[in-house]
Image (cartoon, rainbow, N blue to C red):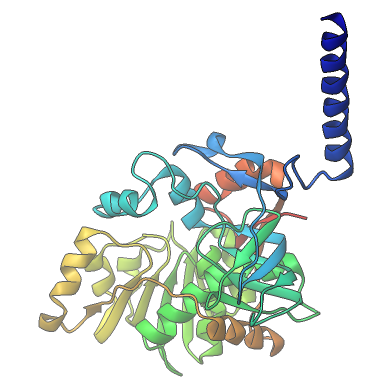
Amino acid sequence: MGEVHAFMFGYYAKSVNYIWVCRRVFPAQDFYGAKKMKAIVYKEYGGPEVLSVAEVERPEVGPGEMLVKVEASAVTTADWRLRAAAFPGILGPVGRAMFGWRRPKNPVLGSAFAGEVVEAGVGAEISEGPVMGFVMGKAHAEYLLVKPGECIIERPADLGVEEAAAMPFGGLSALVFLRDVAKVARGSRVLILGGSGEVGAMAVQIARAMGAHVTAMASAGNLTLLEELGAEEALDYRTHPVADLGRRFDVVFDTFGAVTTPEARRVLVRGGVFVPLNFGLPEMLQALTNCLRARKVKLHISGDRSEDLQHLVDLRAQGLLRGVIAGVFPMEEVREAHRLVEGRHKRGAAVLRIA
C-alpha cells in the first residue's frame, strides 16, 4: 500500500508541477486549453466597489467576426448607470428586464473602444490592423469579439487609441441628436446644456461644424474649454439661469438633465425643438402633445452606425473635431474612473488603458 501511496503522491506532485509550468509558460490558457483574458467584471448591481479585474474566457472567432485586442476603452454614463441599475424614471423596470432583474446578465461593461484586429473569421469586414468602434458591452476586456454589422471602422494612423476611445459615445450621440433629431442647419441657433461633458463637448464642435451659432453652458471652470471647442458664447450655468437668458433658440440640446420641458420651451422660437439626452415619463408625456404645440419635444435613443463614426473621423481630419479626455486610468483603477463619471462634472471622456 505504501508503494501505491507513494506512486499516487508522485503522480499528483508531477501533475501539479505540470499545471504550474503550463500556467507560467502559457498564462493565457488554462489547463484544459481554454484561452483566458483579463476583464473588468461586476456580478451585482451597486457602487464602483462591485467592479474588479478578473480572468475570464477569451471569445472564439466565428464567420464574419473580428477579434480585437483592446488597447483603450471609455467609461461612459451608460456604464455607470448599468453598473448601478440607475435607470431613469419609469425606465427602471424596463432596464432591469433587459439587462438583468436581480443581477447583470452581461458581467462585462464597455462600449467605445480602440485597438487592433488580431484575428478575423471568413468574410469579416476588417481582417487586420488598427480599429475603433462602438458595441453594446464587453469592451472593458483585453479582447473583444465584434460581430457582423456592429460599429467598427479602421483607425487612422495619426489617431491615438485614447482619443479614439474618447470619441464614439459622445460623438455618435451628439451627431445623431443634432443632425437627425433636431435637424440643425447652417445658421441655426443652438443652446447646449452640459457643454463640457462627454456628449456636450462633442456637440459643441459638431454643431459648429454644421454652421450653427452655438451657445454652451457649463461650470465656470470649463468656460475656456467651451470657447476652445468653438462656442460663440460660453456661460456659467450657476450665474446664468436658462430662463433669464433673454433670447430664443432654434434648438435646446440638454445633455445633462439641466432643465424641464416647460423651462426649455420658454427659450425656444416658434417651431423650435427641445432635445433631452436623458428623459423620463414627464418628457414622454410632453412629446405626446407635440401636435398641439408650436415648440416641440423630440425624444430619441442614439444609434451606432459605422458610417456615422467614419463621419466623425473625417471631421477630425478636417480639423473640426477632437476627442476630449477627462483622464486616463489603468484597468486596476476602474473604480476611480467610474466615480469620476458618476460625479457628472468631468471634462470630456474618462478612458481606461487596457493594454
